[in-house]
Length: 261
Image (cartoon, rainbow, N blue to C red; front, side, top):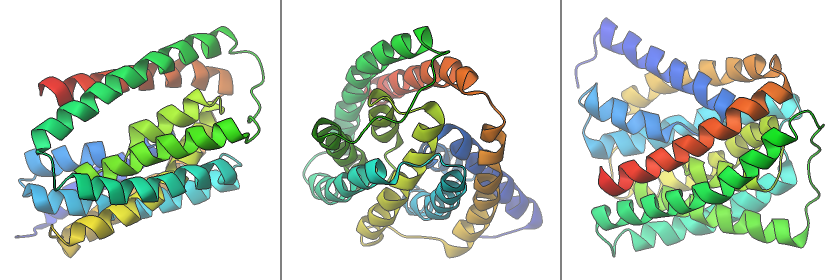
């Protein structure tokens, strides 16, 4: 690839914007990286997928550290999701060799639509009680199982599609009743592990452009560092009113796109 100053600046700005957004709203950014790289920059899909996962690693690492300092990361719940994610990534990489990409996309889209139903019920209850101080729930056996299941689903997404597996992680954390800011911080912590193992699984099959990754990662890291500071200035009641409905709509929309896209 030919790298000129405008192209490099655009990559850094794209990385910064994605890093800022995902550190505020949670996630790894894979849903943004892959389509932007392929549609706007003309990067081949196999490069876009591996570059996306590589760029997600510093974003989620820096974002989770920043959120941890602000006490927005639940380590115990995050580890539960993370272990499930590692298992899911290995399972997903294996299944991806057995099923066609189109069938996998439709199955995942159906899962997203089904997942949006309990999320919607949770949103209605949380918005109703938005002025009530929300404490982090205890890690019961039921929540450990819930975290493991959603972690496996998230890791499977990384293994199947080369993405970070954001929707299952954030949906699981949200349904478990964590405060909105803790959902964001903990999801970044979990997705760091997904990105590492997802990249390891796909490097065998894909390719990576180290220069492309470097400029994206530089911008994304800066954005991920600043994002939690913007989040820290927002009131929890405001986050609960905006975050839940917005993310529920996004999960439902992703499901439709993957089924009919």
